[in-house]
Length: 129
Image 1 (cartoon, one colour):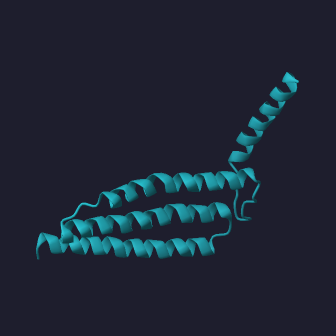
Image 2 (cartoon, one colour):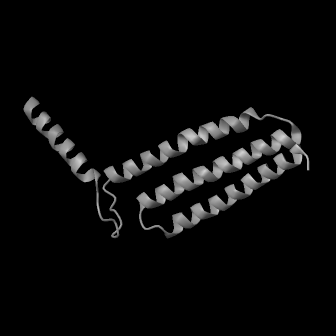
Image 3 (cartoon, rainbow, N blue to C red):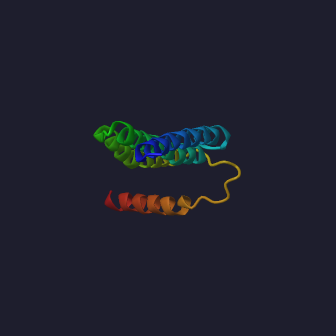
């Protein structure tokens, strides 16, 4: 077996694993109870799925066609940087909009931090009036 055939196999295997991770991500979106856990499933596993798929595509083109695709590399970097940030901002907006946690959630660690900050801001506003 040549190096090119092994590289093509690795690329196809990464694409297959990326597809499986994508299906697992969908199950997480369907089964999880609230927006916070669903967002976790959507951002973490789908980011992994896209990165595996793009890495497999890059490996396949590298070994089969002897072509280094800058667009695929830029896609990997772009997804790696933007997807977790977008997921974080969506969850933050949901939390600040007072979307309820699931009933099985046991602790809200941000409650004390955010409400103490809001009290300080309101006291500061009243002092300046």
